[in-house]
Length: 425
Image (cartoon, rainbow, N blue to C red; front, side, top):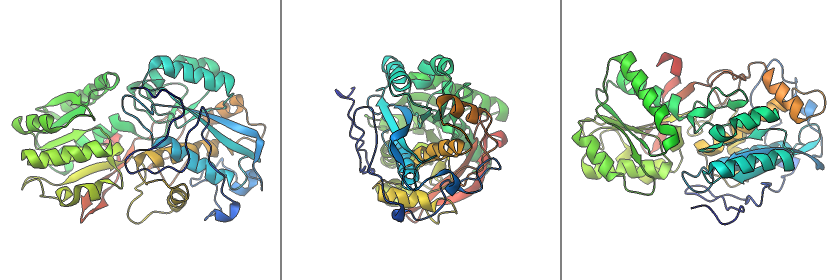
């Protein structure tokens, strides 16, 4: 059910959020410059980027002349993505603490579409016409791409965000910064069959009508390319219901592995249902379930062999660089600012942070005034952007198809692969 007010408290399992998105603006108290742990404004590098981030920031961010940024997100109803906007805000807090961009404060304006196309259309128009945003950053919606594709193109505005819908991929003005669940599913199927040697993978997808055809195409293409037939492919998962019936069905179908696309708490419920139902197989999920809450929630059930002698354990993709274990260079600032903003490390906050990082990088390539037109042109002409968060350089009009496979061993997420690419699947 839709929230009765646009003022939403962004609270979810495993996420404690310091600020509340109120009305159509999401802004948190700006930390002081002294609180910043590193002096690098962006994690990635590009030949077109300024030699130093300090060249494009100033001692005090001007709040009277802000750079307004929009975000359309499904935060209520359907499948709520409430943890992503705080990730965007955390990166903006970080940049604002060092003076903003061209001396101007970044202000995030977030609106909830509730999974409604009508509301998504109204949100986009409000942000563009009333809030005068220069770009959309961190969009994560069940309906935004299919609803607003033409409108964004007509308005000449770029959306830099995630792709919950198949329609998000390949749009002229939409820049998806992560591989997404469709590419992720393909990578998982390849890993399950070719690396782990499974024979009868099954898919239990979410019952979101907008995504079903996209997943069916992924499965069909994979079956044809690899001469396999998956014994069970269905789209009945509802995060509000027990997954036990689906797991029992997979067991009866002879599945030796199950892949799903769902939230962390629901994936935990899947694994627990597998244990109760006596499903002796390996469990997989796309990047949405890569969350620091999952290992302690599952305990010993997550270990290889815990579901039976044929089970190789629990596998989840990290669609961006892993944020657990020993952090690689470039991720320390992300981890530090999560602590400052009292956020949990998970797929959603990382994806929000990275969307904002790419956006700020683009802003820093603009030598003149920052306007909607100059931002759009900067995206369209950006040089390949290399970041610690992605497995390959990002460029407008190309897809990020890199992921890393994670598993749980001894109660913690561990990396079990190098970067995996959809083109190799």
